[in-house]
Length: 442
Ligand code: HEM
Image (cartoon, rainbow, N blue to C red; front, side):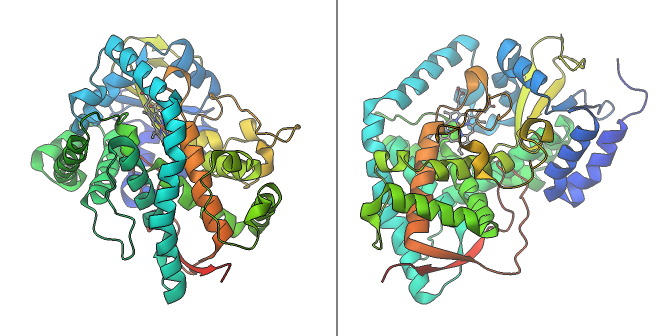
């Protein structure tokens, strides 16, 4: 049954935040979820038939992502929001999706992947990232870390998927239409998540706002990907997420966090010294999987950054039938269900009263390995059948980049910049992260 009021109160309270202070949308949602036992149902009845349920309740997450996962299909929800990706991406039957999933997961288990990953990492660090940082250090130039990491991940992923190096990671940061297109698409996708469907469809019809950007960006995206993929006949690109810059976004938050917590940086450098003594006082590129596997504290620090700044801050689902969630909320085919991993990472009931502090130690097990947290509490890579298959690759790449930079350079964060999240389907920094670097060895 619909409310008598056109929009319910929490939704009205959210609207000015969404438009005027969009960067606060994550913290505002977190605060409202904690005041409402972890679940809010926004009714937007007069403007749209879609209600939005936002939840950070572990029981609901278990229900939606695992026990009742076949009711909460991602494909149906994404069909509209991600229409720019075309039918092939999400508009699939359950059987088609299962088949593709087998292929994707098999791909990530292939030996070939373990052989090619270190090579690609080495190539992109040696030919792209290190020369840029060397050049910036010599010229005392200000660099945007976020742009650097996005370019790194774009090149590494293109090489992995198509065998083709787009060369965006070069001194001088050449213009890359593909990166600009990806940013525009992620921004528009976010607004499609939170705005009533009629509003963004009207924007699309009028060709205004983020919808206008989306049209141009989708064309660029398709054209360039077609070019790359046709360069490699037997393409093994594994899906749309492959092209997003999730790992690059996380690395940016990570470097900002360790600048605020210098003791963490000291411990990472100590760990490198202890586990890889052959690298002492000399330039070294970390691309060897055994070496990277030993960097447990670095892994923990990256996990901690992901907990506080999950790169997919909301996961979207739409039920294909009526259902009642463990929290008691009723949902149906017209309800957009959004799981807020951002709020979950900042929930004291899951992480304790120090949940807002950056403490990599919480990830270290008694035996000195990485502590396991259930994917329904730490939902940043998804949970259940749709769990991210790129998790291991993501950690390997992020550790390689972080260790290589920290070992070879000192990073100085420029003063006076405003660090706020951008509004996008991926949690980025709105204005990037400006830094200067100096070399640690001659
Ligand atoms: C920090 C890095 C990453 C994060 C936080 C992340 C997060 C996620 C999340 C949350 C999902 C599930 C989305 C949902 O359930 O709606 C997902 C799916 C996926 N991710 Fe990642 N991801 C990361 C890196 C990667 C990388 C490096 C790759 C591959 C190169 C990748 C490939 C995929 C694929 C193919 C899926 C779709 C799986 C399916 O539909 O079965 N991800 N990722």
